[in-house]
Image (cartoon, rainbow, N blue to C red):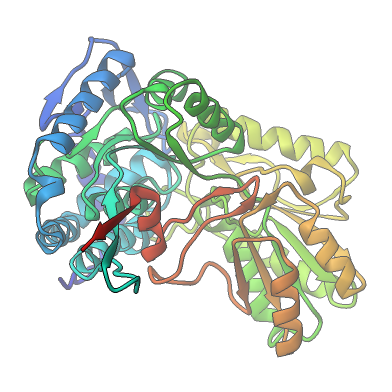
Length: 500
């Protein structure tokens, strides 16, 4: 389905925000459920106002949602549909997401702070494309018939794993939900989706649109709540067969413990990152490398696990590249997420802003040079805004060089040799993504293979499509989202050996 993007003014987005009616209930077995009556306010980081009162789920709501998903898997039609028929429902869901693109984008922008134009043109396109891609793939999957002895027949089949718990973060609330929900549904699983407490409103819409598209009740359930309560209940639940999580490494460890303490469910983790972006002096275009480095760290307010938060630059061009990044940071327009002219919106909330500012203060104490930014801005709005921030002279063993900030804060580290660059890049517990800028093909291949990262971009950053897998090495997680490889997380291999 083709969606024609039209220009919406700041005034029009603001007007639409006043008429938005967010959904704060759970979605369990196809029905809106208020839960036990406890609620919490969904606050907009744009201005601090309450968008909705959201049902605060706990073990009782998780039990009900998992039971609904179990009934839908064990007795319902969804796992028993022809794969192509499941695919048609997912494609219809993609169509409906595209039709309601503006409403969904506005909801995402208001609940987590990103510019509404980015939510509309990037996130909503991505989530619609995801459901469409897996819908088209569903009917094209085949099983295996190995060659065995003449008097036997062997079958190797991939069967749906069962009930999937999907716990997703707030930075790309719909995209990351789609990366988990779409492949799980495509193979016939049922899902309990637990969104971040910061972004429950877009997930609520996703669940209702799924019903409208034709998902049977119980196939996609949405339970709100905080991680230590609702997330923990989902991780410990003995009737959840697979748990897929995107978020921090610390929380990922909890889910592994929950699996060990319950039914040894499979746990797939996409966790944090401290991604290096290596600029060599023979980069095809240093200006482009610098512009891309700035875009990468400030896009989505730097709230990305793949953000190129460590800029490793050869000492011969370090000042030239750093100054170009600093110049871009100083001209970047921070503002109201509903203003189409805004280039960087609000951080997700006050507590997260405080954590990022703590990293800034610590970097100064550690002796890093603050080249620009580092302070809260737009204080009169009531929102959580931060200036784009660049540090250089960052010590490799400092907190800023080692820890994930998850904000618009760049650490610049110079190097003198290629071996030193690779060593600096790999000197982290994370292994999610990396970038390399060079004109030499041998260098590009050699460095890419030496980097311990799940994705390496060469002379670009944050590019790709649904044909390629996404995930990390080391403490950045296990398993892969996107591509046909994602189906491996939600299926079980079964061997059938028949004596003829």
